[in-house]
Image 1 (cartoon, rainbow, N blue to C red):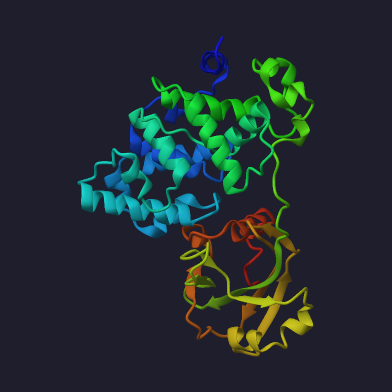
Image 2: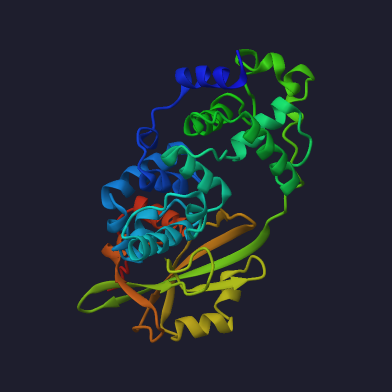
Length: 363
């Protein structure tokens, strides 16, 4: 049995039943691929369903407010994906009457789409013969063909891409791409692949040469930069509206752009509470001596691609309304604001400890 027949035979038996595999709609495939770029299928599936329920067409998405899109995306991380989706949807409606692009070049030209995603959409929606090369394909092909070039370098990816082009079933490229990724995900796994149940084991270089644990080859990982965040959860007890919490909308051009967090003091390392309140940043943010720290959280660790954040939250009750340009929010309405996962985790922990953890109990 040749390579493709063996692959399809395995796929027909083991493929997961996923909604984007039951459609040729390029919009739905596009949404699924963007969600799954940095997300496991198990987590991404619920987000996909929620996204489709809210924005069932490109026109629905194009008409959406960024605030709502980011809120729906909350918890997935890599928020530029959501912003790029919205930008591209608006462009498609404006320039192409809401019709999704139908050529590889046009798909590849959409903001936030690279070679892999363009190939996935083109093959699955339009049966175009463009092979996908993701982590699953890199791992499987490196082991099967004995590729010792680093798969996180251009030369290693190019070697796999050429092999994928040679093996692709031109009559059914969409199925081929989905099958090869599914095989890498379920069978030729990272940690402990089930080689003895693998239909390719007899011709697999890594299995026959006992190199499974050595492949694929990857370059030495970059050590993440450590950063220390001290968030000030500023709360003022308004006589008319009750507890008001003050948020900061991020304007910086970073991964948290247009999300909300709390006023922040970044330090060069761990800092004590007594040292923190002596800083110029504290005086600039709090702007009053009538402030009481009611709670200091544990240290939260949050990993980004090349950063490791150590964050502590200080719940500060103010004696007067702050004059800074913060966004006021009634305590019970905090869940309406899109926030980074780090902030969401703190708020979730606060809620789990009782509804009034952040409230000011002074009389």
